[in-house]
Length: 386
Image (cartoon, rainbow, N blue to C red):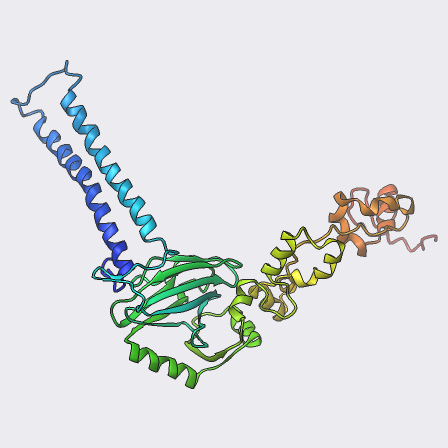
């Protein structure tokens, strides 16, 4: 019942919207259900008083009621939807703290940068230079300005007591504006399936009075460690049921690097690539950027580190068609090496193509039966001629 009894003004308005919409729909549903039961009872076979008129086919008054009532409700729902869609837009800055207090120049605010990891949440507090894992805190009656992204797959950030859910996507940034009006500890979770650790991708949201929040910040700075690129890359690897962590210092520009998918040293950031594209490309010189454009998923990196084969390979942005290897005995067809349609045969470089072709031409030759099946040479004690 947290959704219908929240502690934040945005969530409260959303709950009211659910109630109003439900009541408007019930104005049609309840009479229809009642009339269904009434007609079944009134026109039962044993009721001889019920009027039977097989020639009846039209009633203007009935048509007006049937069409006007749903139309009025649809218009009302449409108006409410239009107004609330704009008023509760997560990108729209708050205009009130609650129903009785508008936002003024003196209203405090706090910025929080959120990164959805596998399977945990990382929170940056740029104004305080700290970060936390799986614990989010904010002062009561202060505007909370969220910026959100993801490190790997699409996810959804949701604190039912605070506001509606908002998606997080790698290489993209979404926004959410909210406020918590009552102090307390609330549940936060991932609302979009993201793999085997999804069910444990939860965090605590602390609504604190300003003095308690200041103490919480001091505690993070006192007990936290340093968060830089190296420690982030370790944290980024998939893990489940991650405990709360505090980081007393954060490397400058780390959130921006995560957002632009260039947290690893040497990678080209998305904003840099977009600038090159905007200028018309970098021409032939852009070949030097190939390695910088390779993006490695945290799951692939972990699998590679455990020796699970090609899953550890980087995912290149663009990959030219591999050339077909030269085949022994086919020197006259060397011009085929550049055919893109035969790129799928690149894995045959380790096979003796010359022997295979001879086997197909001479089925009687030892090692082939003409259908590509291997056979054993007859054991007659005779040695084969060279």
